[in-house]
Amino acid sequence: MEILSSYNLIIEASVILILSFFFGELAKRTNIPSVLMLIILGIVLKIGLDNMAAEEVDFFPILEVLGIVGLIMIVLEAALELELKREKLFPILKAFGIAMVGLFASAYVAALILHTFIPEMTMETAWIYATPLSILSSAIIIPSVAGLKNDKKEFHIYESTFSDILGIMMFYFLSGQIEEAAHASEHSTGISGFLINIVITIVISLIASYLIVLIFQNIRSHTKLFLLIAVLLLLYALGKKMHLSSLIIILIFGLLIANMKLFFRGFLKKFLVYEKAHHIYEGLHIITMETAFVVRTFFFVVFGMTISLVSLLNLNVALISLLIIVSIYIIRFVLLRIVIGKDILPQLFIAPRGLITVLLFYAIPESAQVENFEAGILLFIIIGTSLIMTFAMIADKSRSSAALVEAKQTSIGYKRWKAPTIEDVSNDDSNGH
Image 1 (cartoon, one colour):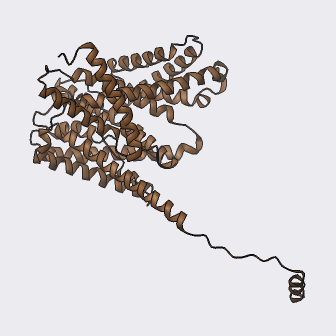
Image 2 (cartoon, one colour):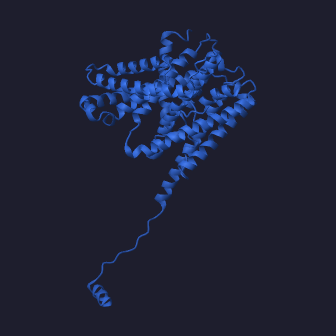
Image 3 (tube, helix red, strand yellow):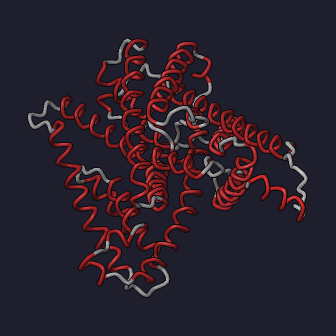
């Protein structure tokens, strides 16, 4: 029987999406990330294909495309959730600071560990490998923190989004430096070139975002939302071809359309038809969430089908992975304790790695690749950090439930009230005189 025939593929894709929906519902009740269930589903499917002696399929091109589209949708989805208000300035800056310092510190320690335990790895290549392992996964975090208090949920949305963007920029900066060194380029861009690149990207992003909103608010066709998605994908791909930090384009567009009244002020205000533009925002929000769900589902299932479980049994893989995981939470504890204070649960343990970690791992330049690096380290850290988050969320939910039960069981004391009589009032008056 042809496993990969047209109708079979339709059936298999449909079943995977249905299972993914139920995984999401199960995740809400158990706090087990649906990502873990999807990876396990992929592993089970791969074992099934191997036992049925199916033809070998190269999943990498599929994984790469799914990863890029998923990355765009996840960042856009997060940006559409961000409200830029004066009262939110401090929480945003706080989350940005924690994300940036946490990323750099985690990458530095992870690079030292990789450099120490993998002899063939130089410190430069160790930084390349360490960066994806240091990026928080907004794909896992944002759906998982829906049940937390508003301030904690908001913090995680901001932090994971900033971690994604900063981590990707840092990765491509390091990759660019290594590729230039490999080709003995005399025109190395360095930090100054990188900063100029960022400024150029921001300017282009703002111009493109304003034009998109002004043009699309006047399009009457009912099919304009997928046209808008196509324009954003095109801008991202063209930006990559021009060596720009393309994710900033997606982020700025999402922020602009989610905060139109802030961006369209002064003389720009008269060009905005708010009702029509807001209608685009609402439709885009729904499409983005739905598309991110579909792409995320297939990405992690395909990833599960590509990984090798044998590498998890390697003691060196386990040791390196455990050291990196421990370093992640030590750095996170210090940062949260300094910036936030004592109330750092469950935030301390919400630091999973996921889609971007995998995507960037497959984007490591050929000149920086180390043959002896075991991909099991990647899987070990993704599963380990996800499980730690799961247990922390379950413990937090149990603690909250226990506190609620205790509050309900604690009786509120009361004292019988007796209305004063005329005689009591006259006695009080005489005592007062």
